[in-house]
Image (cartoon, rainbow, N blue to C red; front, side):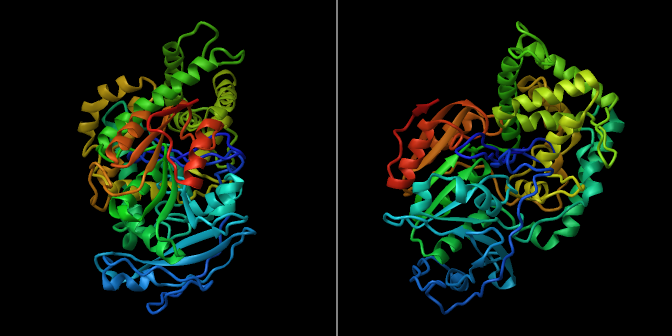
Length: 547
């Protein structure tokens, strides 16, 4: 699945990263702002210094007393909980950076460390300090550090930034935290253009070959870390960070995949839960196959909303007033079929043309936020009427985080690595995909076939999954706010309802709207409810609806 995230218009342009379609299993989307979406979504790289891992220290660099390591902390982990970060100025003004140390393997702490990039912005105003507020934009694979520096640390409400130290850590294997690497730029270009709607045995073999090569490259280039990038390990890393920051409880805002990370933390450390907001929730009780099916239906729901809006616009290339969503879908599907046989020019410096795979991802990228719909209409008009695929290619490149120079960010590699470790694969063979095609195509006549085949990727992963689908109750945790959007494409609304019901202290906050996630996307009702909870600890009434 793909889940990254991409919230829409907030107090300042930003967007979460999304769940990504094809190529692995459901993942989570993450916040990303149109302002941040440069070619390939290049984000600022933060310089980090390694911090000393001092077993005997009980104070931070600022001299604040640290809470004692929890009684349940094994002796071998005590030095990690007691370490002192060497904070220094980040490349982005106003932020401090450091490197946190965590054991690569929690079962064998003596086997080596992993360095985790951390950034923070100290509370800026008056009022009673509320400690640290950790943020994660989703993915898996989204850089929380970049998100903090370019949105949350400057775009969250002033009162929250005044009373919380805003903090982010890139999870292990992600961005600035010993990133997982797989393919180089040219090889990644070929991979993103693989045919994910194979029509015959030859094309199926071609897709399988592309998936195998990708998996093998990840295993070759990131062998040491690939077995240790699970969400459970990332959640344990967050507890070390909590202690190092001097917080008795963890306060956290997680979007999309970040909701799974936050829920996992609550399951592991329920007594250390402070104020948790899980926005655009995943359902941890679902298998990878069920997550893929649900996300496929979610993208269809989002496309139906886009279709209804498109036909009301004068320049909709998929039909005019009176055209039904099913007709719009049929026309888009026919266009994809045409691209499959005859890719169109894009003017790309590397000679890439727009085929079905890149064209589909371009459309899917715009489903995360209705603010992107006008751009999608223009891109579709250019492609369908003038044979110019540049607009859809640009949308696809932003989704894959490909720069104008042909380099890719770490997002896709980390995404696959985490997803394939967290759950057993959706399918184990092409034959299983073929049997499931009717279910996926029923869920989405437009995207179902491609999303089903894309879910085959983890079948060839070089490392076996260590996680499993299960309910998360987190008994004993403080109130946790779960936010769901009714027409969310990447994390369908039923997932939020399910997670809120599973959590013993969960309360559901609903946004009746389009796009991925809800907080900071324009609903004063949602924002007020979340802000009140973060500032005062009072969750909204269970079942509260906003628009």
